[in-house]
Structures are given as structure tokens and as C-alpha cells.
Image 1: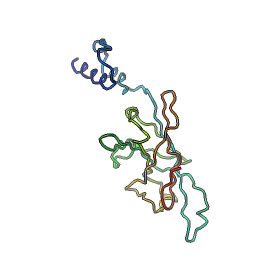
Image 2: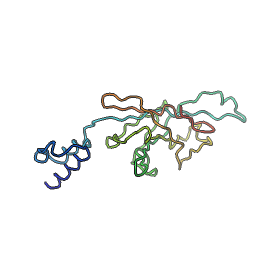
Image 3: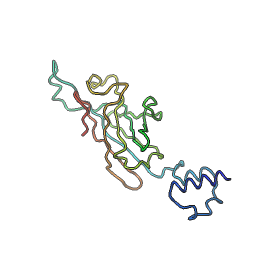
Image 4: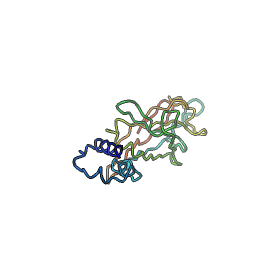
Length: 191
């Protein structure tokens, strides 16, 4: 019971709600699940944070194929993207492969090159998410025309990171976008 009272005090301190505001909380708490829900860490989702965008490939031209320079960028189906956010202490990879130092989860683009990442609840409180979080392309499918691009992208190091921008904040749902992440011959282009 002493641990339960201590845990309740910590949750209340985190939420910046003085314990005196609800003295019965200690006596009527049914356990760990209720305390987690009070702190916003339970099974019930209190808010939603979505990051979305599109990965495009602009084919390299020149040499024997100058006509490729006139082609429009096309969607990259099956590209893997990762979200990473910087905190006060260090950079944390939030959704990505373990070798990138993160949680074991990858997000893959669909047939239109689009991705949608629903961040886990415990990450929703990151302050100033637009400055703290970025999205990187970490792997391309083997058959992608962009695999031979001389960009900074390799399978051991991600390409440059795209910034996110808040597009909507309604009814407990915040949406951010990277817009288009275009892989080209000379650099990554974020539009």
C-alpha cells in the first residue's frame, strides 16, 4: 500500500496536480491500472499524434539516358521510414529498427509511396514536436530506381532527415506532415 501511495504521488507530481486536491485518491485507488490511466499511460488512448508524408524518386538522367531528367518523380512503394525525436538528454529513435537504437518497429510506404505513423501514447508529450522530431528514409526496396542514387543514403546510414510540420490539431488528434521526401540524383528534396 505504501508503494501505491508513493506511485500516486509521482503521477500527481508529473501531472502537476497537488495531492491535496484529491486526498481520497490514495484510499480509493484500485491499483496499478487505474494509476496508469490517471497518468495517461493506460490502454485507453487519450490523444493521437500522426505523422504522414510521401517518398518519391526522381530518376537519374544524363549520359545515355538524358530523357530521364524530364520525367516527374514517382512514388517509392516499400521504402522504410523512421521517426526520431531529440529530447533534452539525447536523441531517441522512436520508431525504427533496433540497429538505429530504437524500438523494434518499422513503417513502410504503401503502393503510392505514402506513410502514416501513429506515435505511441507515451511520446505525445514531447515539447515542440516540430523542432524535436524528423523523418528519415532508412531503406529502399531492391528494385527501386533510387537505389543507385549517389545521395548520402546507404543501408547502414539513413538519408537526410525531413522536418515535420503541424497541419491539424482537432479533437485530441494532432497531425504532422513531411510533405514529399524526394530522392534525386544530387540530394534529397523536401517539398
